[in-house]
Amino acid sequence: MDELSLQNVPYFFMIDFLSENVEIYKENEIEKSGLLIDFQGFSNTKQKQSLNKKIEWKPFPETLESFKEGFDKVQKNIRLGNSYLTNYTRKTEVQTNLSLKEIFYHSIAKYKVFYKDFFVFFSPETFVKIIDGKILTYPMKGTIDASLENAAEVLKNDKKEKAEHYTVVDLLRNDLSMVADEVKVDQFQHIDLIRTQQKDLYAMSSEISGTVKEEFAGKVGSIMQKLLPAGSILGAPKPKTLEIILDAEGYDRGYYTGVCGWFDGKNVDSCVMIRFIEKEGDKLYFKSGGGITHMSRLEDEYQEMKNKIYVPIH
Image 1 (spheres, rainbow, N blue to C red):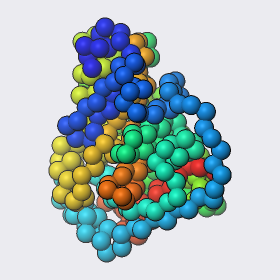
Image 2: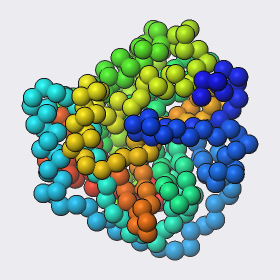
Image 3: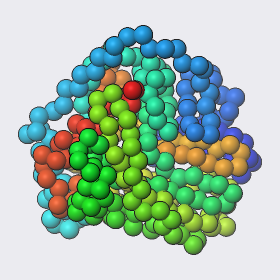
Image 4: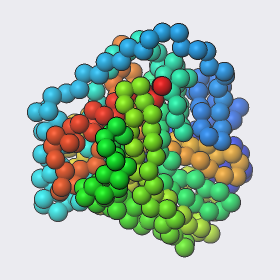
């Protein structure tokens, strides 16, 4: 990645959660790969056909008891002081009459990628942007059902969600300081509306920026290596929290919660691969979760995990 970005060669990259698998496609290789990409500043997609069918969408979430096993492991570690924020995720079988390709074409999101016979995601979360030597990150933490009364205000003032958001902003600010100078929080607790077929959600994010340090200038790979895994889908402190996640979740996240991005020869736009549906054999699994703190309630976290199992087609 460094080699290509230092030569100003445009490319698309995908890095899995544990940074064990990295896929890189130069611009002329994307079409052959079968990848469909739709970012705000880059797209290789054709005009979508209209969807002439009623959407069938049925998730089969695990029981509360099953969810509780990993949740209790996370809470125990938080009580022991090993972590103060852990992002706990699950995989849920979903049945739908939509193909992965149809989900890609018809969902509405900032970042969408379809990987043939493997996965599709429709992510609302930017990871980092690098624009003219400035680096920006937008941690997203905290969601609420938008139909609730005064939902946006409730979300902003919820003690648990607030603590979670403060923690992630602090973590990302520290992470950015490894590769950038003059790091500062530009926007705090910004609320976005996410429309879905099932229900509308409000999500809370912030903006943090800095100036890329000289030793990292043009080195997109080195920057990613320093910043990954993304703090918003891991927790804090990072190394110990990763151990807790691997023990509590009991499944392989793979590319889910990894990052992917487009380098246009000069600037970078990248996202966290969330809102993720993966194909395993002839079944589809939706991977979702949320941040756990010492204030988290089991039933609320279970509900949040289920709330996120949606397609943004409306």
